[in-house]
Length: 162
Image (tube, rainbow, N blue to C red; front, side, top):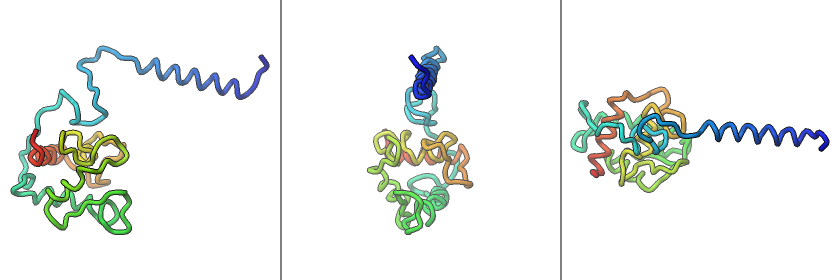
């Protein structure tokens, strides 16, 4: 067979793909975590939701509202024409109402923004943790602490108890 550049490229692609498939083999590294790369979703190693901060409950959501206002800004997930995304968060009413409106919307991942069946699999929750779905932690530059993310998780579980 004569040497052709296209044959060499095809061979290199075949070798690269074969190597990647071989590297993705299973190892015995403990319990399988078959969810995605999410902190809470389908993760049997995570503890139940808890919150030691005030302002993250259905009765008093003042701290959560303040955190979400950074997300609902006009250039991010606000309703203005300069919003950078396909979905918006309306905080003109209650926080619960704003989050409930996101239960029917799946962004660019297989997860609903707010999952009313399994709150731990909510994409909005994942976005404020250290392992976001899209690879970019939100809100950019105003990151939530682990305690704040866990309190948000508790709030979602209070909205949608399992």
